[in-house]
Image (cartoon, rainbow, N blue to C red):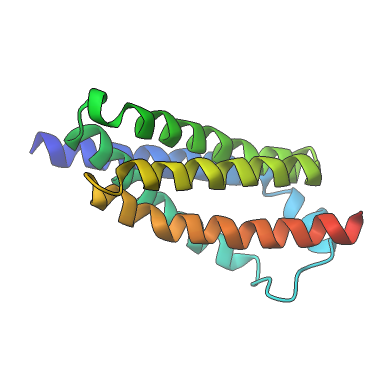
Length: 156
């Protein structure tokens, strides 16, 4: 029962952070983001909320699994890269939507992607559950880099 409780804390915690960040940037969507040049494959902006709710569940379960099933000695690097990708993840929205710093946001997004791929690599052999759970997130980050990069190039 303790493991289930800790899993719920991970999921709810990440969802709350995601909702808080979403709330902070909500005003910039109609007034700034929707006025930007959109990439040809850009989905309707409502898709982003659904995608991030789903991805945060996967990211939370991956983190929970990593912390609850893996020793620090064996997965120290994976835990560091996991934390770093989360910090970069959480910083991207305020940088992009609030500061309107498209170039800085693109750099942060690339770093997030690299740290996520590193986490997958560090867990691939001995904590495959974490690695598998992070693959959709890594793919979404690549797609997000395409969207951010398109705006960056078009504005540049």
